[in-house]
Amino acid sequence: MTRRVDTEDSIDVAAYNKLTGSERAEKVKQLQAALASQQRFFMRACEIHENITKASYEVAMLIAKHGKPFTEGTFVKDCVMKIVENICPEKKREFLSVCLARNTVARRGEDILSDIHRQLRDRGVDFDYFSLACDESTNASDTAQLLIYLRGVDDKMNVTEELLDLKSLKGQTRGLASVCEAVDDVTPPWSKVSGIITDGAPAVAGERSGLSTLICNKVSEEAGNAVKLDCIIHQQALCAKHLKSDDVMKPVAKTVNCIRSKALYHRQFQQFLHDIQAEYGDVIYYNDVRWLSQGSALQRFFSLREEIRQFLDETGQPMEELSDLVWLANLAFLVDITKHVNALNVNLQGKDAVVSQLYAHIKAFGTKLQLFQRHLSLTEPCTAHFPALKDVIDSFPVDINVVTDFAAIEKDMLLFSSPFSVDPNDAPPQLQLELIELQCDDEWKTPAVFSC
Image (cartoon, rainbow, N blue to C red):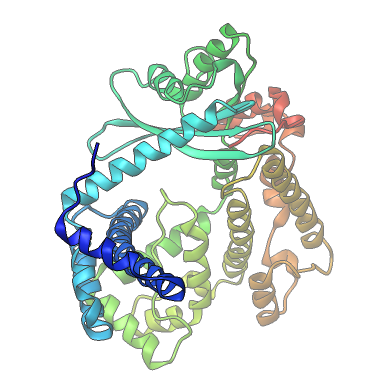
């Protein structure tokens, strides 16, 4: 069979056959360079397209992480284009090719979610054990939402922690079917479930028909053994809320609301702070739902106490508490103790923490409370850990027994620092049942390593 060769190929072959030695080698180099140039051209075009697509996914990921609407993609692109026009206009065409339209961002988000689930399925096969954490809340339309988190560990101690799913619950909010569906989707067997942690809501933490109980029963049916726990942060928040502070918080909240709720009054107060060059320019609202804001609101109010007193006196609405030595001392004490509580809360948050570490923070805080009690019960009180209280004492050199009655809240402090030694009969009625459950839970006495 003879191969058909067109005229141009024949000419090239004939010309190449005439070359010998170094001429032939040089011709080969020229042909290779031309081929490489063509390959680079096509590879460059492919690389640019891949980078454009990758950039689109990266922006979609940021939009999703920050909870922004999908339409924000168009705004982001407009901002980027203004930057490109002024810094590198020669790249304008490439940046224009990045698609960040609403529908595109939505599809990118779906692709990212699918990829996360794929990775979880791949890793789930290798899990030796895994635990679940469920948080139930209600959105603005009164629909119950169940957040399901998973943490798994393989034989090489590689830990995987991820939001497994978000389920909307209908009817009775037990959520067992939703959790089963989410777990089965990543394929690890139920016998490897080591624990279930909930936020303490009755629907998920009930002793007989709560979600945590139902999951433990299912694990037992699969020849596994899982423990159920309430989130340690949830319990810490309940204890912190029990701190008697109404005599301080009510006047503080009333004064802050009075200043900030009236536009004219608020502007006058801000101008007053500006005129006297105060450390801060405004007071902070306190929201009882977001109870951690209590510490920030108290700290700001305490720092501006003299300015607030002057302003209220000038406007004819004096706050008598700001001239009360005992009340000021209680305010200072509450500022300091809420600061310590907020620091504990921060230590209990974050990824890659296990229950043994979190429980260690709780025990350490209990020891700190006992130390605080001893320091403040001395004839010459030690205020090294209470800078705000020290400030008040230094400003008003009087007997500390007049300034603050620490013994009055001794039982409350003991409930926080040593809950296992408190008789439930001596606890406040609203905490007695939870205290009984806590004292009967051996896992809190000898904590195992489960995620929260």
